[in-house]
Length: 370
Ligand code: HEM
Image: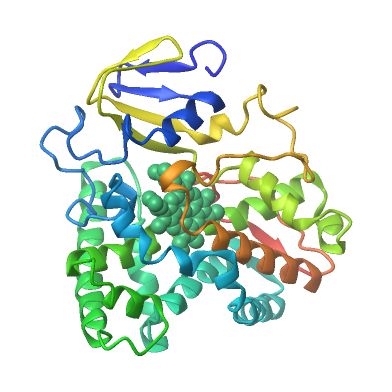
């Protein structure tokens, strides 16, 4: 597709697909022509964004200057320098989970490490009290839940579960935001509570978007890393430092990008690689395909753990560049380093892998450690 129809109209979905690195890069940078706000798109003329987050305005679905107002107050907190002081705590959290794996001997890496680790990290950053963490995990699971099958019944069940979780979480966040208005803590809920430029709904939206954007993505990065290392037979080389694990993580991001696709809507008629896109049409921006574009990456179908340069687009580009990219990198850096150096071998079972839908990741990854 990338070569034959780099910008392609999907008759069934009635949307455009963009595959080439150059085009993906352009669409993501040009926020004046390609808006992140899909509420008024041709696909969605009623203005209902079609998701349970529709009522909440967040940075991810707004354009400048509003986008800046919704993101500006928190930018600093996610810079690598600001996150550095959190490093020891991330190490402790990793060790605690790894201790449990060591005792078990056999475990599902996804269920017992890759899911709980990022949820705990975000809960701590937000300042969710420890006694609420279990409920918090249930809510965040519900927000990203998919129907068990394609039946109408399963879809309705999933919707109800999501709506309930969103309502309960909204109420819970509203309560914490209210209690923290005095600004005494240094957690992210206190930061949002004291951000005068945001109203209450926007503050709640901020708390929720961290869960939606930060959990499943990081779970998949950790899982895809073990999957790639085991598949390539390089786990030991990464563990010993013979292969630089930070570079290897970047290659995992390129090769098995946790988010494959983001969406934009054209705000005016525009030509892209010879195709005419009309105002109001939705554009699916395939970062996963761009990350395997041979025009940019030498031997794109090969996993090269020390690839240089590696200008992948796994965290997006432009104003919506992933807020949590430095955190995700730090989490992967610490978690994989500690996990791989603790065990002589991980012995992941790569037979019968079951991918998850929508994102790039696995439902489970059975491991046996020694
Ligand atoms: C935005 C990927 C982890 C928070 C994005 C975007 C991508 C992305 C592709 C751009 C979306 C767009 O342009 O429409 C990833 C990947 C991650 C990850 C692959 C892990 C490997 C995180 C984490 C957090 C986070 C850990 C927070 C704790 C956000 C937020 C945005 C965002 C808030 C919206 C930024 C904006 O609109 O200005 N992410 N993300 N992400 N991400 Fe991440």
